[in-house]
View 1 (spheres, helix red, strand yellow):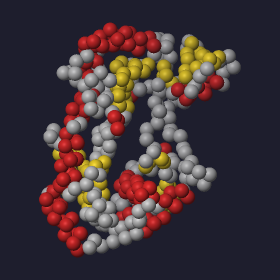
View 2 (cartoon, helix red, strand yellow):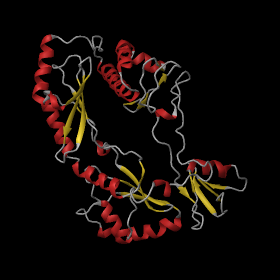
View 3 (cartoon, helix red, strand yellow):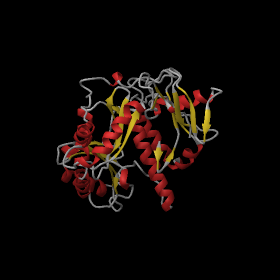
View 4 (cartoon, one colour):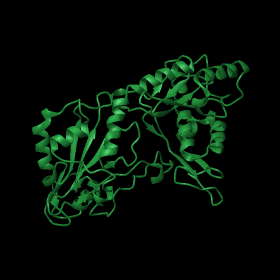
Amino acid sequence: VHVKGRDYSVRVIFSNHSEQVGLPGQRALRGAELQCDKTLARLVGPYRALIADRFKQSPDLDGFLMELRDIIQHALNSKERDEPTWKDFGSTLRPEVFRELVSQLDEVGWELVESIDPSMSRIKVKLCDSHYRSHTIRLVLPPKWPSKPAVAHLEIPTSQGQAQEDSKGGSLPTILERCKAKLDGFNDFWTVSEDFDKWTCVLEPSCPSRTCIRRRIVVKRHCSLQLDLDPLRPRALCEIRFLGAESATGPLILLLNKGIGKWSEERLPRENLEAILDVKFPTSESSKTTDYDMECGICYSYRLPVVEKKSSSHGLQLSQDDQTEGEMPDRMCDNGKCGRPYHRACLVEWLRAIPNTQQSFNTLFGKCPYCQSPITVDAA
C-alpha cells in the first residue's frame, strides 16, 4: 500500500476453507487472515478494531486496500499534527451530526450516492463531467465532521503537481461542485487519451485509467512509440520516444525532426503523428497486441514478474498479484533482419555472462544472442 511516498507491506492469507472466488484482487475475504509488518502495526495500532471490522465486511481485496490506504494516510496526518486518533471512529453518529449528513446528502441528491460505509465516514458519489463521463468521488468524513471538513478523492492526472484530493472545506455539495469544476478542467486530456485508446493499438498500459498520462502504441512490427501527455495541454507537442530496432526507428526519428514544425494544437496528437510520420497506426480492432509485442528472446516471457520486496528483516513479501504490470521488452537488435526484442535486465545479465563482452562506464557492448550482430545496452 503506497501512501505519501512510502510502501507499507501487508499479507492476506487465504486458508483452505476461505472463500477464494474471482480474480486476484477481487477475492472475497471471508475466512482470510491479515498480517502486516511491525512498522505498519505500530502506526495503525489505534485503528486495529476498525481495520479488523473493515477486513471482515469488505466485499473484495481491492476495496479493502483502498480503505486501508485512507486509514494509513489519516494515521500519518494525525501523527504529523499530533492530533487524537479515531478511537471512536465507526461509532454511532450523534443525532445532530446524522441529521446534518442526511440534509447535505439530500441537497447532493441521493440518486448520485453510490454507497455509504457502515461507519458513515466513507461515501462514494457519482459525478458526470460536461462531456457526460461518469466519475466516482470518494468522500472521507473525519471524526469531528462537520467542524472539520471532509476530504474528496478524485481520479485525475497527477503530473504538474496536480492534487488528487480536495480538502479546502465547505459543505458536501460545495466540495462536489469544486470536484466537478476540477474534472471539467481535464476533459480535453481525456478526449485525447480516449482517441489513442480507440484508434491505435496500445501496448502499455493494458488497462489505462483516467490518471494515466503515458501511452505506448504500435507503429509497426518491432517498432512502437511512447509518449507522455501534458494533462494541462494535452494537444501540445509532448515527449516522444521511439522503441525498437534502429533500422526501424531511425527513419521515423528523422521524419519527426523534419516535420516537427507542422505540429498543430488544433489537431489531435494522433492525427499530428500520423501526418508527420506518414503512417496509419494499426488499431486494436484491426489487429491484436500479440501481433506486435513479441516475447523476450532470452527469458521467453513478454512481461517480467514484478520484483518482490521486503520492508524489513521481518517484513512481508509482496507477490506478483499485489503489484502493477512488469517490464516489457524494450531493447531490440538493430539488425533489420533479426529485430529480436529483449528485456533490458535479461540482456544485461546475458552479456555479463559472456567473457568477451566489453564495458564502457555503464554501457555493455556485446553480440545479439540470436544473430550475433553488435548490440549495446545500458547496464545502469
